[in-house]
Amino acid sequence: MITRIVNAQEGLDEAVSLIKNGELVVFPTETVYGLGANAYDGEAVRKIFEAKGRPQDNPLIVHIASVSDAEKVACDIPDVFYALAEKFMPGALTVVLPKSDLIPDVVTAGGNTVAVRMPDNAVARELISRSFPIAAPSANRSKHVSPTSAAHVYDDLNGRVPLILDGGECEVGIESTVLDLTSGSPVILRPGAVTAEMLAPYLGITPGSGKVIGTAKSPGMKYEHYAPTAEAYAAEDAARAAEFYDRCVQEGKRPVLLFTDCHAAELGARERISLGADVDDFMHSVYSALRTAEKTYDVIIVEALKGEGRAASVMNRVMKAVGGKTV
Image (cartoon, rainbow, N blue to C red; front, side, top):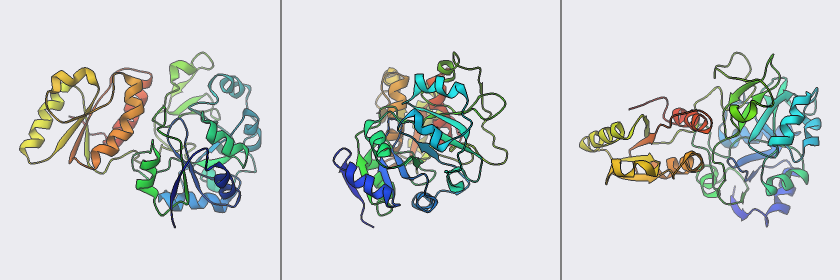
């Protein structure tokens, strides 16, 4: 299969045709790039799992173009969903709801709930509105770092998908927050840019434990994710990072530091990829930095952010990327 990268706006007509004909399309969102298929077409959705090498017991998110679309893919929708949608949709919030009979079991890994999101990207919403609700995980090989540019997708899926819509770099840079509204009380299954603190005025929530019993209701819960091909660690402070870096050099390895700019003086002349000035810069650039680092370096040392909110969301991804290893 030949994989083509096309400007997102210029490639829309072709992308709509592919989706309508049961094929895959990679499309940009504000979080990460998605690998999409018609959410109503079970055979098309199975191609997603094949292209990614993704286990079929890991459910997908269904992307919609309008709040009213939720009523096509879900049922028994609670009033709180509409309150959340008014504030956070389009945006980086995914909500788990009881699934409609129109959604095949392959999308939900056999479960009776469906994860629903409206992306804050005009191209993505136009693609959906002109075709169907689109089931889509991140457009990378399973367990690899999620893609935030068309080039990242091409590195992973060249020869596996026909079309990549290039919409530039993703603004947010990590996957959406996933909120479950089908349990006894709302639970955050995956943290993201929409934080618990932001959701609190709309509902009382409790952060999820991260453990899954039975069928997973959300992607990103049962398997390791976001991992670079190089050895990777999180560093609790710059001094420890510098010491570990020097030890790696002594062992003949080539390490690199992924740190924010405020630590530049402490890290000196050691090789570093900047993660920007603040937590939003970090969130936007960390996946791209991991992908850049794995191509050149043996060891990746990532700054461990402290605090709640988006810092905690970013560290959820970093700790999965490094497999829980710290220095």
